Length: 306
Length: 278
Image (cartoon, rainbow over all chains, first blue to last red; front, side):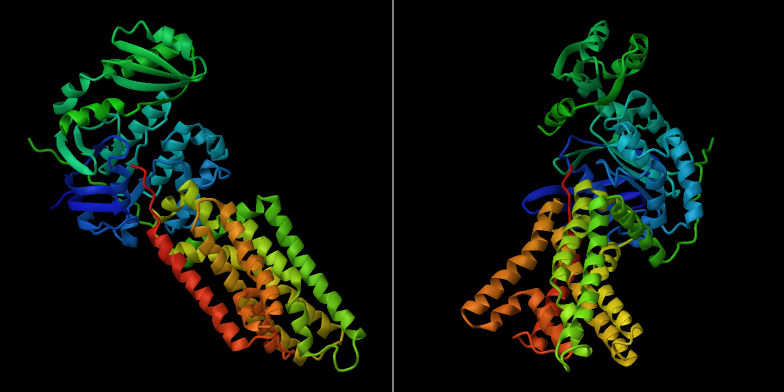
């Protein structure tokens, strides 16, 4: 057992709901993607790793230590939660500074490190604006900044790309890659396989609280390509965008669930994600958010687990 | 060919002490309070009303027959000022009810606890936000009244200092009680409105019916159910005033017991807060 994260038969119940079910996996160095649909147990695993939950059964270690109630270990990790956090009236700079102060960083040092971290995630220009005015993608980057700012050994990122706009996604992925290239470890959850594929080949598939597969990402790619992949796009002009996207021959269908939302289904997600920025740029339509509902991944998991 | 992986070096920063780290939560909480007009209004009005009425009572005490005016026992009167009950409830509801509930709702709690602090640290910081504000109503007016009385020569400094000491103890007890109970209620819900309603229910929902019931069935023991009446019994005894109908040791035990129990349950509750997100 010498992985960055080692989990052996870990189970966690929330009353009668099973969050993790004898979860066993070993996450090595570098970037590892934890892929699974909503409700699979990803956040539960992360809360166990950051010491906020205690497993009901089994053993789990992070960086070789038991995370439960392990206050010194918390200094070695950076956690980026999925949900929007803290107080909207704080500016991005204050948000990161407050959390650095909780790490025990002196005020002057916290100011410097917060500024540097916000620069890394590309939020320098918005650093002194209240975070309530941030787009969802900007909030994701601010949360990534607070996770990075104290120079942890490992980043635990819960759906860091959720809701981020195309430019924000690129920035987040680049930041994560740079962190890993410098020798840091990253554990990142997502329900969109194509996002994680850009930065790592190492994945762990989780479903119903169990690790059902681990290893190279390409092995399950073929399976996923058989299922149309859904992408939800937030834009003020969904019909105009659909018109522009219709020229992609791999697009299967469009839906307009709300006046500012477009859901696209494609058989070639790679191509879709590659071509989308150019189309958005050419048509000068604004895209405020991009998200992949997990129904396509869910179909794959249903296939995998029979 | 061999590959050498880069070695990541952590930024080693001397870890400041627990007090400094908790101050980050306290300072953020106070800044949040300062941003809300209702919180400022209720704090300023509470401190002003209770202090002014206490000092007015001080001057009115000279209208009483000789022997019943100013003395240590006089301080039982401002200590039982109904404005204290009203403003403590209002402050607990407006400021305290959201201290934990808002953090659970926004999941800031999860983010806080991803840092090197414990649940106990978090709770202590939250208590340190609310308690000083409540003390502006429970302790400060009594201290100022004693100071004014001593400065104007209405009381000897000996009695004034004694009154101030007692005020610190009984006011501190009331402050701890409301802080613990408010945080407990705030930890039970994600909606601060529910916690705020709980604060009023604990105060007025127990005090008023207990008073009516005790009167109607001529059984003062019912008053033990009311935290305010427990406090009055302790305050009257401490200042040497005539009794409030119930025994102060029992009242003290109840008030202390509920305070400790509320704090313990809140701590256990916070350790068990879990959010199922996936």
